[in-house]
Length: 202
Image 1 (cartoon, rainbow, N blue to C red):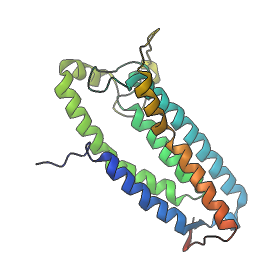
Image 2: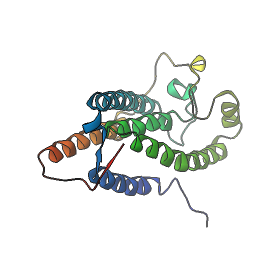
Image 3: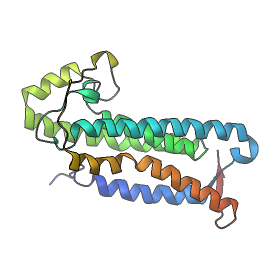
Image 4: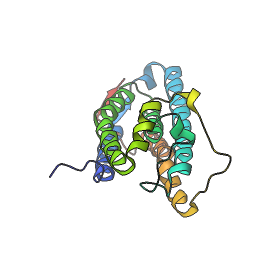
């Protein structure tokens, strides 16, 4: 039986999150002592990306919450590209990397994301093709897979939203912000010498 990457995506993400948290706890940015202005710039870039990612994921959830596998969503962010939720997730992951005030973590997160999520996307699109057939084929031909094409943007005048499902999706959309909060707590603990670091990285 082939490995169902969609089914175990949540578990894999949680395991990866724990491993990443360990390395963040064990690491300290060398830029803190060598160039404080640069660490400030990295953190600001990270905060901007995390903010855009969180808003973008909430925007995507507004359209898809309650409609997964029920109908093909092609409006709003899904008119820009076929996987806007993952596009904004990539921005958020890179943003968290920059919030560590290093260059190592955003590069590492980009590599990890690029190594894993293309398989998730391929698996999901295979399922969507099976569910929606010609309608999804037409959507594939006119809409890019990952990077948004803003000239394609379409949105309806009104849209029916399932508030219960959307409320659940909001919490998952905000985990980037929570992770930045965790980073700040770690930084505060490190400054008070409650925790140390095993190594310093750029």
